[in-house]
Length: 451
Image 1: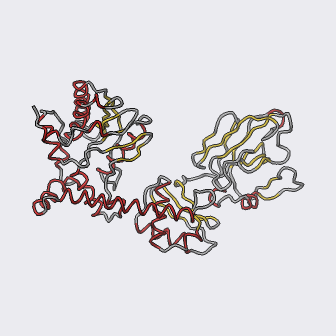
Image 2: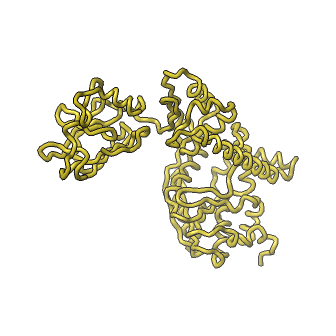
Image 3: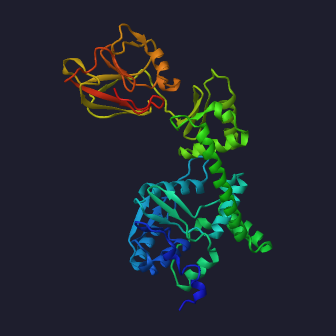
């Protein structure tokens, strides 16, 4: 019989979990996740939803197939449903192997996680201490130094770390007392990896001098989490005064009125809100100087990772990096199915309507999609003369970088429509006629208009 002292960190685990559609243990097969799965399987009658396990195979280690089989066998023994996911956790050139595997793991889990479920991960207090030190050595701010949150959103569900107040020693004691069979990943002993160096060399030396170090570092992470929350609250207030009417952009003139620390805080908050990787401190300073203080007629652009930031008419616009674009392309389109234009960065959609939209003569439903090459002109509905497309796009507030990627619809040599902008004179459906309502997903400033 296991003593109550050994049970203490775990005996109320199931009842402490929030309501959910299901509880899913992220099960690697290592001792930490095995203990988490074992504890919850023993307490499953106290759970308010079904329990299952999910295993991520990164495909990096030669034994990964054996580990997956081990996890599936343990789940059969515990009568816990098992699901395995496959991902490529290999690091790109210059990328940390640990970071690459972690990113791949969380991405595949976020994509798979069923709606309303809770994913339970077994990181503990010692992991939290290691994470804080790693972030400190990288020069992270309060958000990075707050280390791992105990409860956060993930995909369509939530991610919980119920062991963050539990030590590695307590977990190992439980595993040994219950004679559990777990996997030992040989790479965990390789001190070429930063976390392993901390775990096996640095932290033991520090803990000899300061025995309560892990607890102190966990407390420091909690303090930093509070500071990060306060910084976010301030950024939220600044966003309300610096955000554009559309809500997706920042107004340069309002940002300039903030002191530099608040500018940086708001920029970080805004970038994170839109789902992009955080720029380095150097890149963030480049953003401030280029976007806020360059001359009005400049067209600044700052790129990092998969994001690029531009300025147009006094507003900062954040977007995915645009791929290379060939303006000489000509694409035939039957208007029946949506047309994805990867290089142009958007999707064309045509919906059949009556009495409005694009109507082609002789019942045709085929057009050619081309792009701006300069000198295009068109006649707007009801207008008596042509005007240049360049001036029209300027008038409609289409950003410079969007204009060359804006799809143009032609029949022969005639421009008949600019999706999201206008259908040309002579090509509008009349009352009772079938037309096509056109939408182009890329246009930010003018909305996703239909014509």
